Length: 362
Image 1: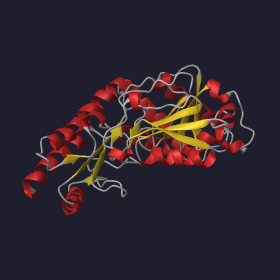
Image 2 (image 1 turned 135 degrees about the horizontal axis):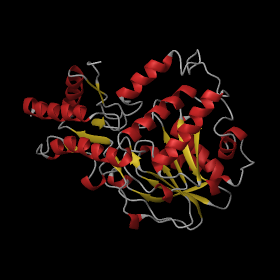
Image 3 (image 1 turned 45 degrees about the vertical axis):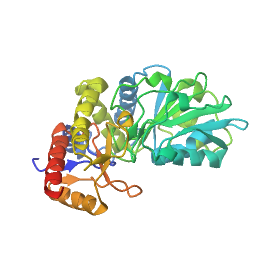
Image 4 (image 1 turned 90 degrees about the vertical axis):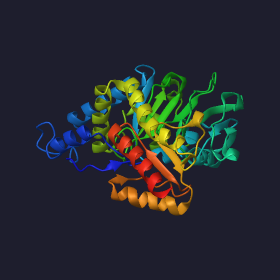
């Protein structure tokens, strides 16, 4: 396979080539069972082994091998925006939210539907350019939880710190940044992520929840919406997305083979710096959407001098085998999502393309 595109899609996103090749080899018949995992019963011993191993691998890579449960759910991270307050926002309490972009704002809006939700900090007035400092966070002592988005996919920012919340549970949407860099996962009572960025294909959402949050079962909501239901059934309460979870299993093994999260961070910093260095050296031709101290190593966002040039940039990039560089429809511009599986060579090729484009269109 020599004609692989330079895939900078924001999600579903690039998967490691080695993972795709192994999945291809095992697609028609898995492990000598005479059928594909696409056909297997989720009650079979073969799938139950995959399910258990994948949970263990995820907890291990997050450094949470005790005191937490890993769940595999449907509906994407957007469903978690609603499920979190349904499970944890009790009457008389408030859900607190740090608003740093489109998705954290949607999570806050879902909290408002369920109960009382408040904004603990926001950088919206500054057009998302720089993330709130720890001292900017005003945490209501009556909070049921504090919710944050650790990496903002659309805007291109990421937190460099984890807030101290005391006894108030901290919940993190890590959809675009999970396993991209070391993080003190023990500071979180709950971590969740749609798989389609750094964990695997779309179709499964992971939720890692501390045991104490699973002690009380919320009787006022349907069983399928309770985290306790999925935890007590090992994520097998209803039919899970078997093949997507199998793919997550392969990706997690790939992460370990790369040297784990510490080594991936080194690679991700080097990859994103290739692009940021071109932006910073362009004399203003390329302008980053985010202040340097808040830049994401996963989602690099920038603008060109005009929308016409941005359209030309995207069109020409496609002719050079680049995919997915148009910014989100809500903000425009350019976005290069350099997730774990995006190779260094792809980022180097993009940096070279950007330099040539400026020379030819400056």
